[in-house]
Length: 205
Image (cartoon, rainbow, N blue to C red):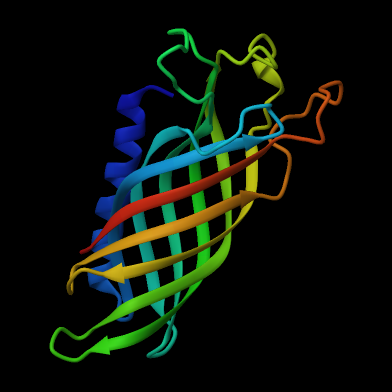
């Protein structure tokens, strides 16, 4: 899917999110943008050395004064990369996986700021479903067999947010695949899984 269609999907969702959040009591919309630090377990490369973009929108519903239920629509880049050093060749091993992702989670809030009417600290946990749009790789493990990457990625997630003010939050999230992302049984590994840290700034609409 080309960049134009990706941007169009995000833009349409944000507009719908904005309309819905203002039309329904208890719903809150946010725009999210940030970076992923990722690795693929089982591909022979270690460390969260692959950086990727993450962005999209969040819609949450206030269950009560301390708990929210949240849903997100994200464009997110996962993958892996060999460590970069001054002696590394220009064509280092790298795999990039571009997903549309749909996280669903429960948020617990604490430290209420009365002057601004918002909570300073939030923690959340849940799961996500991601659909693979495209993949590229220079990793010899599977660079000639990219068709064996699964179209779907199911994962568990946990994260925390710190409010920078009434409208802005900084969020850190850890996501771990629970199903294999590669389906070639001849691959000499116990299965490939996405691991990633996400760091985003979230703006309340």
